[in-house]
Amino acid sequence: MLEEKRDMYIRSIRIRKEELPSYSEYPFSLPAVRELDEIRLHPKVTFFVGENGTGKSTLLEAIAVAIGFNPEGGTKNFNFSTQDSHSDLHRYLTVIRSPKKPRDGFFLRAESFYNFSTNVDVLGIIDSYGGKSLHHQSHGEAFFATFMNRFMGRGIYILDEPEAALSPTRQMAMISRIHDLVGLDSQFIIATHSPIIMAYPDATIMHFSEEGIAVIAYEETEHFRVTREFLMNRKRMLEILME
Image (cartoon, rainbow, N blue to C red; front, side, top):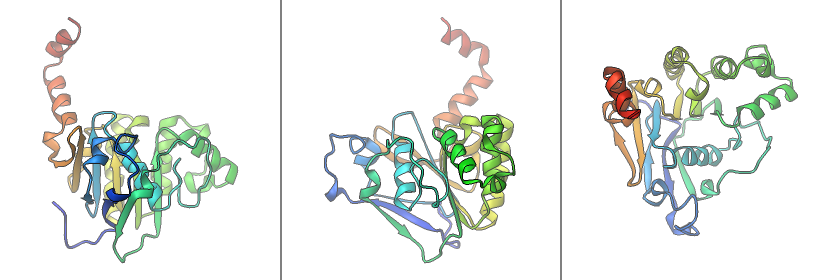
């Protein structure tokens, strides 16, 4: 349920369907896009969850680009490009903002993090990321260092599958850091498969499927149900999987 007492930087996202070129072309053919009219974001944390290929990262990227972030990640001041692979979906989104303006912002995505790290070195701004080149750390360490050092608060933060580089312990530490940043007046939109990260309690979980997008409870997510079933019945599940 949305918290009405706290305003957010982004209130909702609408798609201008009358302008879409075709429902038969990607990404407009995705059910999450085809069935989308408007989604209201939580003032603190909104999760995009669902199976691979349902459009979570596609919509997340489009939102990031629509509000001014580089498609490959970073702050709004980053403009590097190694491969122009993002869709045109952002051109058809209307972002409903509040009068409140963020002071900080970041688009963090796992798949282009190496290129982002190179750009940090080129720009000579490693002090903002913990004082050590991100390339001189493991992928997980560099990812976590960015999250811990560069995110300053009072910002809009968009994260695409942050768990890809993080151990379960670091994922739990990420929950703590998210909570700290929410307390510093920040808003998050996160696409994730991690049942640990999406357990953050003060959030809205949006499930992407072949039917479109629907708000669900944490315990209703496939990520929670499958993980719980596997851990509680590990031997039997392995027997079934390896028959």
